[in-house]
Image (cartoon, rainbow, N blue to C red; front, side, top):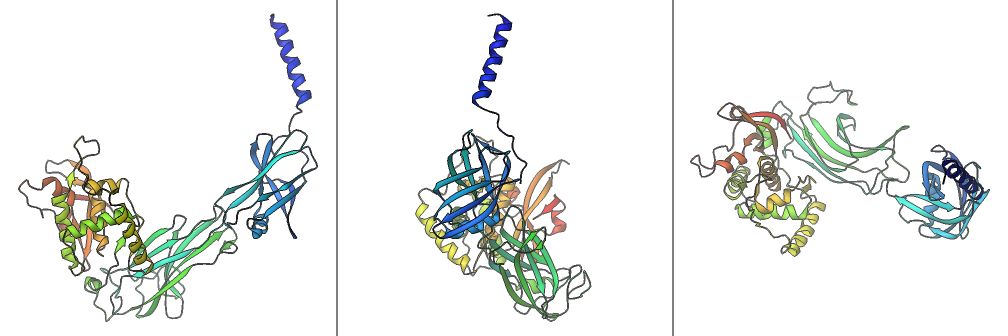
Length: 473
């Protein structure tokens, strides 16, 4: 066929297509009010506007999102069938003047689901189908401060350069509003209810919060204490609470009750200062909240011979010795076979039972959950193998399980030949004093003539000789 005939045929097919299928209007800008809906269920009627969502074509249809007012009205009927009629306010969007769907639409009974109607219609504007879509992003529910714990001497807290008071809290909620900002705040209030110190956290991820308060007042505090100065003796309260920040100020979303918890303590110059005062402050055990990992951790603690009556110093020493003699330094890409010491499949029933017991302790505020589970940590614990960061994670985890404050240091190990290598090690606070431990170096050199306490319980000055500190968490 000659080229001109082929071109003519293509033009005829295009014109014929236009006659059968007229062009459709383009998408309205996001937020354009296009419809008014009337929803009925029995004697209940709700009216609300519907807005177009830009580029939300679906077949020959559109997704029309309900605003929050419509959502609030419609979910009052929970899962009742709702018939919907629509008055078209923007004729450029749809050819027809109205759309009616009488078969009934089921709305969720969950008040935190963001629900929107979607209509699918033909070229003549007749509704072919309609439905409801859900996204669990609209409201916050069940905000709670599950635990608030102060690690403080029974006689009070004596602020000073070498002292701090750990404040720990567990947070939870079921959902949040993606259009707002969920914040969590810890405040120290004096006897008149005026705050002398406050710190705010982004709480959109919930979980675990730990603050080490050194007894100093924060900037522009309500009590009028000079910023950076130690607060005076007296009775105080720690308040932990959520707040929801919107563009029009700090307030919670509709139908959401703020969650707040307070705990009392006293600041006293008569309490032993510094580490002596901290030494008698009891730490609460911190679990990860992962039943399998916590179960294995407790197994290791029992294997290490640690009892509740064991002193904090001996607890750390036994954990250090246990890891030195039971763990192997194996790189990720190593072909060396890893033995599995804890078969979690066979232990499933015991882990389940353990989980119930752990949750009960959590609810009774006997333990805290950190929700801090490192990548592939379970596998390294099951096989008692890994590299420096894995061993540092496990050492800190085991210490926290027995109520000893511990964390991870990262930076470089300084080799004798002048080179340095990226490395991770630990600190632990024993009787108010911070000591440093490098269990991975010990694991690598165990049995090579240096003993199994070569890098055990070092001061910062001693640690600096072989370790270059970059961060401590």
